[in-house]
Image (cartoon, rainbow, N blue to C red; front, top):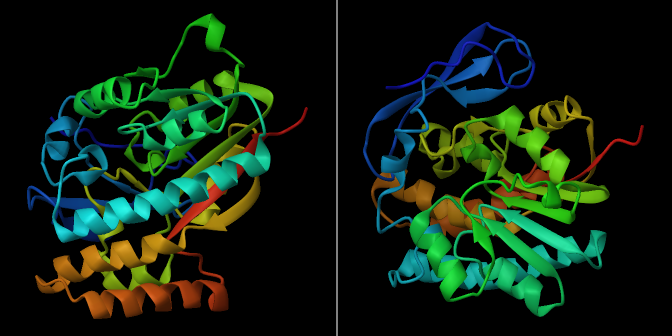
Amino acid sequence: MAEKISQCPVCKATDFSGFLEINDYFLTKENFAIQKCDGCGFKFINPRPSKSEIDRYYQSDEYISHDAKRVNLISRIYKLARVFSIQKKFKVVSSYTKTGKILDIGCGTGEFLRYCKSKGFDVMGVEPNDKARVYAQQRNKIQTTAVLPELKEYQGSFSCITLWHVLEHVHDLNDTIEKIKSLLKPEGVLIIAVPNCNSWDANKYGKFWAAYDVPRHLYHFTETTLKRLFSEHAFVVRNVLPQKLDAYYVSMLSEKYLTGGSNYFKALFFGFWSNFQARKTGVGHSSQIFILSVKKA
């Protein structure tokens, strides 16, 4: 049964307005409503699939973030980009923490953590998808659990916690942030990457913007709403960085949803233009990385 949100997860307001009606272009073709909080502007699916229902919206061989075997063109591009992206992610992490233990929430098949491990970090992953978790454990030799670790031995033990395009999938948003805070060392850093629904490509493609990805993406962040959400949990944003490659990948998928064709040239141009507009206008890139830490008392 679908569940209805009656209170904004960010500001606790109870009045919402309709924002967009969007189909699940990726898998089921079902229609979902995105609403906008009248208090803070936060956008989210409402109503949404419950935690017991959501798994079926991930059951596809095309869900390449969890599939290491796909060989079509888009999956090849994705995997090539992922190799480059892993190095960029590690560069971000190593800019803020030089030693210690890294927890990657939503670690998928574990390639990022394997790279961090090769650089001398102690690593651990959280991955609810059984297939991806087993692959991470068996092929990449990563210690992985299905849920956030709750044992006392893990409290305050992680120098860095990362969520690379994961926060938008989490049902229990505020509870999860509090658990993350309890796992982080006092001087630790939290690194989060999310799509930016205020970006140029989001406005250009509208309901066909692939990063809405309903209903898998339950929430749709802007820089303002993410900062406000984490301020409620005593986090401060230390820096915001772009993920420039995402504009190209998202534009490729968005062109497919919009026209039914690949339109690679258009997608490359619009990806470039989105990044250009992000620098020129300040609306932010298609996806952005937020560096956060707990506010000092």
